[in-house]
Amino acid sequence: MRCAKKLLVAAGTFALVAQPVAQAADYPPVPPPPYYQPPQPVYQPPPQPIYQTAPQPIYQPPPQVYVPPPPPPPPPPVVTAPPPILQQAVASDFGGWYLRGDIGVSAQKFVDFKHTQTNSTFHWPDDWKIEHTDLKDSVYFSLGVGYSFTSFFRMDVTGEYRQSTKGKVTGSYGENCDGGGICYDVYDFDHQASVLLINAYLDMGTWWCFTPFVGFGIGGAYHTFHAMTDYGFNSSGTTGFGLMSDKSHDWTFAWAIHAGVAYEVTKSLKIELAYRYLDLGSPETGVINCGAFGCAGTGPRAFYTLNELTANELRLGVRWMFDCCEAPLPPPPVYQPPPLMRRG
Image (cartoon, rainbow, N blue to C red; front, side, top):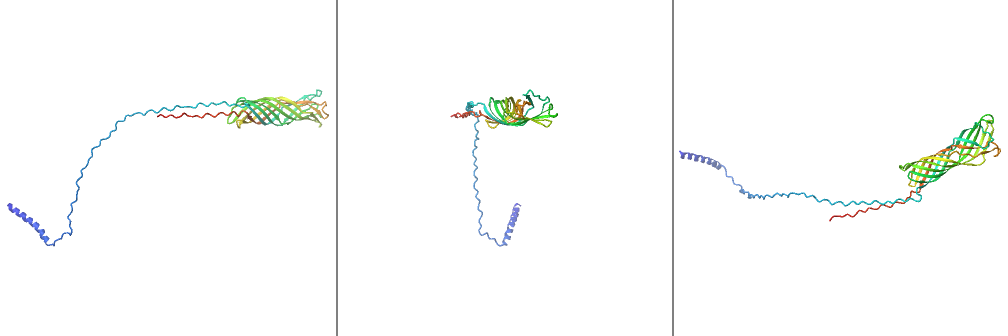
């Protein structure tokens, strides 16, 4: 049985192989390709060994020990320059002396025109009174010299010449008036005065070159009257005439009050603008002793007093200081620092 099975298997295998051979015999043979080259084997290099480096040791820096830096060198000693030696300025020979000049306008007035008879045989009317007084404004200029004792106190002496001005007075009376009404006398005269004053001033500090000041002065006034006439007008229409034969002069006590401000143009030049109240006293005129029949008549001879002659004035002045040009101070010493020393 076993042999029979092996024969059947061999017969089947042969049949399977013989069938495609028979079929191939029915077709013509296929020639091989003309240049057939069998595939070349691909060269495979042998594997390279993997090189492994030995592990490197990790560098560990030594532990840091903090060492503080050395202290900085001490600073060089501070050398201060010695204070400069300032020499006291030497004033000029004039010290605090100054010159001054002023020009001003003056509004003058007097309050009464009192008469004094020189002919005792003539009866002056009991109802005589002054109706009107007038004295024109004047212009004056003055020169002076002064001394500044401190920056706050100074004094000077001034002399001034005042322009001659016209004066007029009108008086009236009714007693013994020719015609039985009111009679008038009109007096005309020229008045001129020269004034000498000693003044003291208080300067009240300086701000932005402006120095306000006040002052007071005392002295005297020399008055001159000339061309004095007396015209009488009676109610009856008649007139009378009298005059002073010559010029007359009189001295009176005078005083003044000052207030103003000075501006410092330079150290040596100051400009002043000031108000002044001036009292010229009560000067007396000469005697009106001449009339229509000469100067030896028996008429109402008399002289007159200008009571309380005063003036309100505005003036512009300059002061030239002699002590402005003091000796210059020496220049301050030049500071020379010590040489620097470096450590080796």
